[in-house]
Amino acid sequence: MRRARAGPDVFEFRPRVGIAACVVWAVVAGLWLLAQARTGLVAVAATLPLICLVSIVVYALFGRPRVIVTGSAVVLRNVLREVQIPFEALAGIDTQYALTLTTVDGRRFQAWAAPAAGRMGAARVTEEERKALTWSGPVDEIPSSAGLRSDAGAAAVVIRRRWQPPAAAGTVDGGSAARLGGAVQIRWATWLLVAMAVCLVGTVLVGIR
Image 1: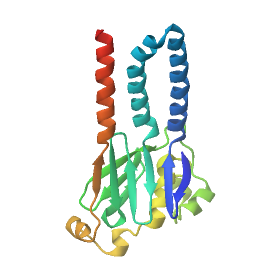
Image 2: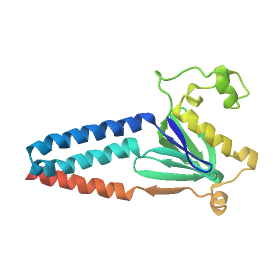
Image 3: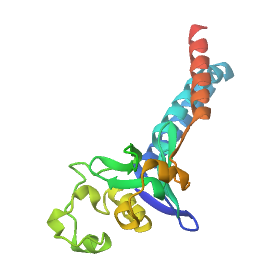
Image 4: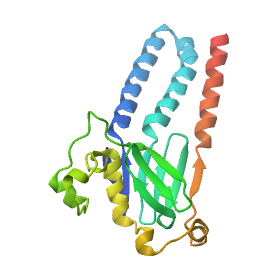
């Protein structure tokens, strides 16, 4: 996972494999168009809707997902929707399968951009990582998914450093969190769905002709 500052007190997490997938597809799409251009502009026009459709899908799956941590909230930008969870509404953080945030009203939201390390990528947490994680127990008790070498673990560390758990801040229910400005906001990527639908229709029409 690539971690970079996106602004003052803002951390943005994006998976390296997603960036690599977008680059690979851009090269493939470019070569595809060049090959069609040798046939003629008609062939390019006939292929363009399909290339645009695949490009949108690749972007949605690999380029769009990210985890953004600000001073007041966590934003999970997934394939087709974006979930903004203020720290007042956050109740728990889990990294077993992917970065999963539980809100005070019991809802759970997973981050597409921050999966836990698989068996091949799992590694024992080191003593240095234990200190960075501020873990007071033995290293053997720390799951590999919570380590800094795990996408889910790296994002979780930044969130925990900025979040005051309900146990420390006092119990807050879902209604109280909403009144304090801590309501969870969910936005669907409508523009992405519209663009995908337009390209799909164009691809079908070209195929019919």
